[in-house]
Image (cartoon, rainbow, N blue to C red; front, side, top):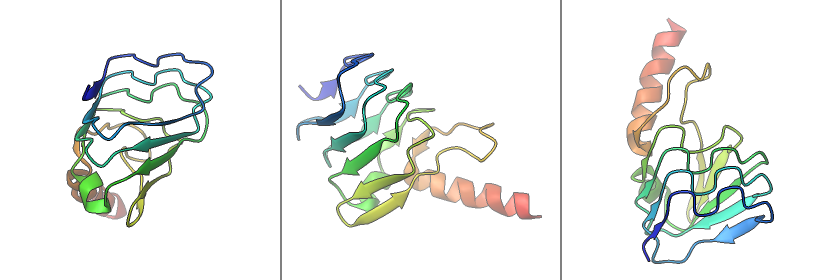
Length: 130
């Protein structure tokens, strides 16, 4: 198994934390949708994509530990609104990445790699300062 299927853990009321196995490469749409008690997840370095709404409806502060580096995390493909707004940081093996995947007005959602996002946000911020 390399993918966690669409909605696999949706509305799992008792799920508080989970460590995904090393062979997982893709977290599909709505995988953890509505897991309101989920507070921590460990994602292996081999994950290459996290699809839209994967963590939608998780209402608690979610702590994400990514077992790869910051540079590897920036290459992970993410679908629009892949995570709830209350994720503030991703803890990688070599440091912490700030999580900023939408603008402050939440009027734009982002799809692509997090490395692409860094340059897109820099452009948006420079336009807002003018």
